[in-house]
Length: 337
Image (cartoon, rainbow, N blue to C red; front, side, top):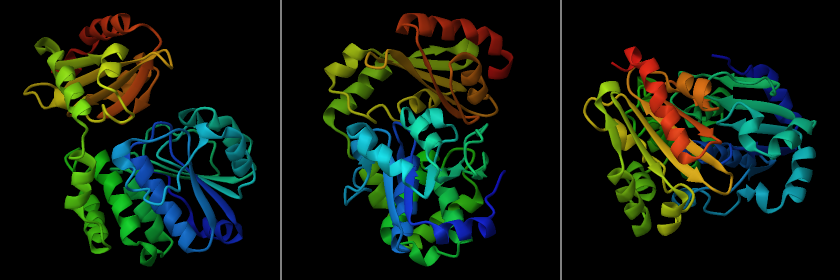
């Protein structure tokens, strides 16, 4: 764990006026929740703070940004380049490599602003002057809660802030069932509930607010699942044609890969999703126990993440990518028992 020295950071906060908060590209619940929460606290302290996301985020998270304050970089790069270059302080949340924010990365690198990283993924880069990195933490939202507490600002946690943080912790822990959900995680959740987070309502907004097309897309995905009992592995795939057929929207496939792990005996699950716009196959990987999908992804599919949850991509076509995946499994047989 690398923890920020609050004593060093406080003078920077006091001398800063313009602050930018940035999530990773294709932001999920943890990225959006942590950014909204930190931004709200900073604004309550009088800073000119704003969230700039590399691209848009899923509809099921839009309720968190109830005032539509999140700026979408790809909609107006020139305007937001200027804001980034003129910022005093930049917080990067839920990612640890500037490659994770696409074209924004070069602008953030060029900016003279002091960079602060808060993240829980493995192998952080060294672009930030101040780093809070903990791979044993459940989520970046849990880390942001601790960060706010370290600054003695828990009185600034409004129901909106509490709800945003609750959302990120809930989604990144698979509703509190993943291994990095600790006793401390539950203590934080308890404090957020006291501050106004309504767990039942948040769960309904995130998980029970699906379009009919999304449910049909899930049905199709499950129908093509392949289970390889020899390697305790399950995988699924989606073509661009099928995504188009069911009017795919950003975030619609969130959590699909976890259905593979719900099958008795399966330790390793993958989903392969064709993306004709970026000309890649997006890959999501999940595992149980000590099978390290972060290592698997880094070594084979240009990605990374956590021990039990990682992502990657392939520039080969869908059929070639799946064939490569299947040919890799014998190398990991001992670890998948």
